[in-house]
Image (cartoon, rainbow, N blue to C red; front, side):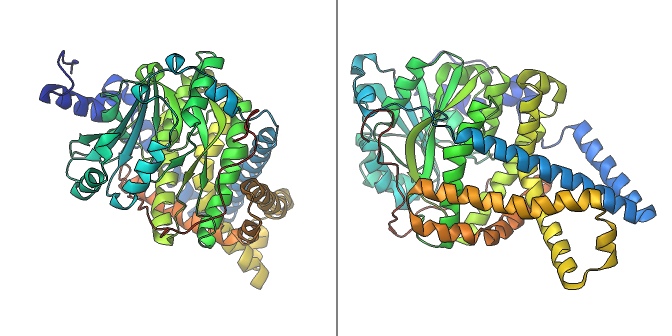
Length: 498
C-alpha cells in the first residue's frame, strides 16, 4: 500500500495510516512481527521436545527427572549469576546519564528540536484531569511541542472526559479507528503518522513526568552520537505505600530502573524498554519499523530491534511517576501480559538465532535469552521447585533424594539460599533508592510476591499458546488519591538542584 500524496486530514490518508499501523511491520519484515506466535520450525521443535520428554518419562522416569532437574538448576545458576553481574554494573555512579537543571534550561528554545508526545489511552476517564496537569507542567516551548492524545473512536467515555477537561486547548485528540488488534502499539503506530517531532516519546494516561524531562532528553541526544536511538527515563511509583502489593511493585521498579537497566546499558546489551518515557529518534523509528501491534510488550521488542540494528539505548536520570497496581486481579492481568510479551519477543528474535547472535554478540545473546525467556519460564518452574522443597521438608521422600544427586543438589542449594538472599538484598537497595524506610517491610515479605509472579507466569505461558496477541486492559485510577512518600529524587541531577 503506497503512501497517499494527500493532506493528513483526508479519509484516504487516515485509511493508509490505519493499514500501516496494523500491517506495516509484518508486510515490510514478516519475521519481525509477532502476528504469528510460533513459526513452523519453532512449533515443530516444541512438539518434538514435548514428545521426547513424555517418552522419556514413560520409559526412564528417574533418569529423565534427574536430567530435567539438572538443566533447570543450570538455568537458575546462570540467571542468578548474570543478574548479579548486571546489578553490580548498575551500581556505578556513571551508569546513568545525568543532565542538570542549569544545563537543561540553558538550551535556547530556538535550538530545541520539535517534539511529539504520544499518549495512548483507553477507558481512562478517571485520570484525564491529572493527565492535563502533568502535560501542562512540561517545560518545553509550546510551538515545538506536539501532544497527541490517542483515543479509540468508540471510547466515548474517555473522549467526553477529555473534551470536558478542555484537553483541546493544549492537546490534540486523535481518534484511532476501532479495529483489531486493540493494542497500545497499534495506537502509537497510527499516531506516528500524524506526528511532527524529531523526537517521539510515549506517556501513559496516569503518568506524572518530571517537568524538565524533555529538555534533559534533548540535551542528552545533542551530546551523544547518532547510534543512540533511545533515551529511557526512569519510572517510579507514587503510591508505593498504598498497600503491600504496591510496595512490592515499587521496590521492584527501584531495582529495575535504577540498577538493572543502567547495568544492561553499560554491558551494551539489548535493553527491554519501559512502556513509557522512552524517547526515540523519529528517523530510527522509521528505519526499524516502529512498534509491533501484535506484541503485547512492544517496548521490549523495540529495545531488542534497536540493538539488533546496531543502535544503542541510554538511561537518563529523570523520573516519571506512575500508579502502581493496588488490586491483585488487575496486577495479575498486567504481569501475565508482560510475561507473555517477553516470550513473544524472544520467539520473534530467535527465528533466526544465528543472525541475532552475530548482530548483538554472543554474551548479549545469552543475556537476552536469560532475561526475556528465562524470567517467565523460571517463574513457572519456581512453583514446581517450591513444591519439591516443601515435600522434602515434610516427608523427605526417597524419589526427591534420587533426582538430586550431589552434582545437582549443591548448586540448587546455593540458588535456594544465596540466590534468595541476594534477591532480597537487591530489593533492599531498591527500597533505599525510593527514600522510604517503610518499604523495607515489603522487601522482607517478598517471597509472597514471588508466588504471585509464578501464577502470573503460568497464565502468561497459557495465553501465549491460545491468545498470543490478546491485550488485557490494566485499569488505572485505583489509588483513590492515596498519597505516598515515594517520589522522584529531589537531589542534584548532574549538577543542578532538581
